Amino acid sequence: MNFDLTPEQQLMAESALAIGEHYGLEYWRDLDARKAFPQAFWQAVCDAGLSGVALPEQYGGAGQGMLEMALIVENLSAGGGGATVGQLFMVNPIFGGVSVSKFASEEMKAELLPRLISGDLFFCMALTEPNTGSNSLELKSFAKETDEGWRLNGQKIWITAVDDNGKMLVVARTRKIEEVKRRTEGLSLFVIDVQREGLTHQPIDKVGTNTLPSSTIFFDNVLIQPHELVGTLNNGWYELLEVLNTERIVTTAGLVGASQLAIKLAVEYAADRKVFRDQPIGSYQSMQFPLAQAHAEIESARLMNYKAATLCDNGEPYGSEANVAKLLAAQAAAAATERSMQTMGGIGYSKEAYVERLWRDARLFRFAPVSEEMILNFIAQHDLGMPRSY
Image (tube, rainbow, N blue to C red; front, side, top):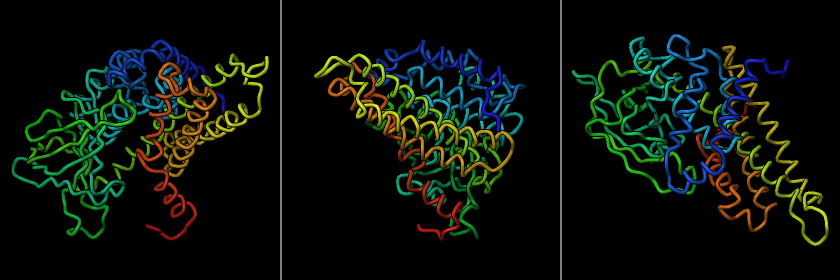
């Protein structure tokens, strides 16, 4: 195994870190307070050619892979953005980029990918529903076939980064579950305009990740045209898995970067803070050990994520590795941000110290985009060969 980065990969990582640090902690604190989208940051990422790193060159991408994307997300996150940077890559290069580049028609690729890569177009994905949660095979949203295409009715929840001028990857049933032999049959993927008759959305007030809105979506007899189908009609489950597994990789990368940043802030604070005696609190083992433990855990998540990304790029199965990496990263990020706040004491609870935003944002990923309990179910069943427990 060779763990060295190529000169090109190193340059990508350095470029990403430079952009991340340019739009640093103050920038993100201001956006968080205003619940404002990081438009300038994302445009800088696109202008630097980083958003399309894993997308085909013929549409303006760099033609690289998920390993390069993971490196970029890590460093952008470590520069100041934290875990929510992973969400930006999740909704655009993954939900939009992976689904369209791998499964859409040539016409859709030519229309959408250049705009996505340039930052002119934003994506979101409508998958989760109020009554199904992680049980995606039991979706109730139904697209009924008509002479025009399909008419979609249903509801989605916790949909990230809905933009009225953007596109939405919609996952819906095109055959009802009682009509299929296997539950994996009858699901289809569509890419539609967010601004469409019958489609409405409303924001959800939440604890963190305030720079990207989360919304409830309502579909009331929404027209889907034939050319908006992505992939195979009624067989979208396996295509969806490719989107979800690559989603794990960018989520983990964002958590790794956020943890690096939180630990860095704590170490810097501990190097200056003196209490009771004339030496910094960073010299106390009670301060060192929790941060060292968090560092060890996040390094393990990073390496597992690199393995998942490399397997993905080589066309080999990588679902188990992507899930393990995400599990480790979410737990390590929770520990890293919590211990960073604890190191700082009262000041860590203030907006002034920055780490409270990292803590709030990272907390989401203990249960999203897949909960740690569902990952453990997956590991027990698929990796250990134990009986299905749910």
